Image (cartoon, rainbow, N blue to C red; front, top):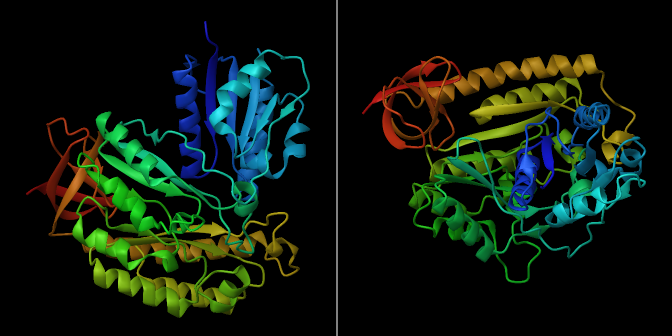
Length: 435
């Protein structure tokens, strides 16, 4: 009889996708998958280091799991062992370290370690040099069996001054187009209606290859599967939104009109210090071009507040610029000092109090912008992929431009796509009635 294993994931959607892909490998190998927290022979913790908070949570979860009785085999994967293998190995009770490479062999590595339970920790963290191959792991899925997440790109060569991710994820690697189409075909055959294409630096898809493939080619490969009902993109840089991508969004209604374009700051001085690939004028020009091409598009963003050296005047520029951009949603992050990055070496760090204050002030801009965007939907018909019936008794689903819709219905709408008329605002989304 095979062993039991449980999984715990910290961090981003790419991390969640990686965990689900590894879970699929163990399931196919005959392992029993049990909820994390229940007794299991093996516990796999997929870690995050994008912020100090993420790394701290990862470390605490490892320590908490080590204290379980009976103690499971502790496997630590992801960005924490990739960036600090000695630190992770020093946590007494960790049995196996696997970074962001070799995860396709995770079952084999765990089985080797199970045969040597009393041995010292096994460090299988490998470097991620230029030219590393893309790990062709299977797509991951959500619990509803309506939406699947397919990682098509890995690594980042941007080296923003605050970011640890290039060190954790390595250089650019891309999933072959044939693999993208094959995975999308498999997912639709299994009943999934929507596929989300993910990457660490998604807009750089194909950049490292000799054949000139681009993100628009990856989107075309996915859309070439007739049974696919919806396609979304994860986060990508504004400067990497190609005209061909917008043309596909215009021509194929299955390609959802939602783009998440991280701004990070609305102050040019701060953007330059961050080593971002644009200034505010260029960013504004790009989003105006996107909206002219796709009027219904939702543009969401990330903004970091409290970057080293950010003055009150600098932050005021960010507030003004964010308001002018009219984002559908702003994800706000207080700057987190990451050891080994240029920004961490700066002497002009801001206090946590100043960062918290700026988070709250930007949240008000976000609230107003989100409400204004949702109001633009009122009176118009939208296609909705229904996910579940919520605690309030209303059905919940998402429009192509990523607005949550609530509908009263006695029918079982799970996994269906229907067109409804938006009638007003409701909670974090909009209320709808039948067309």
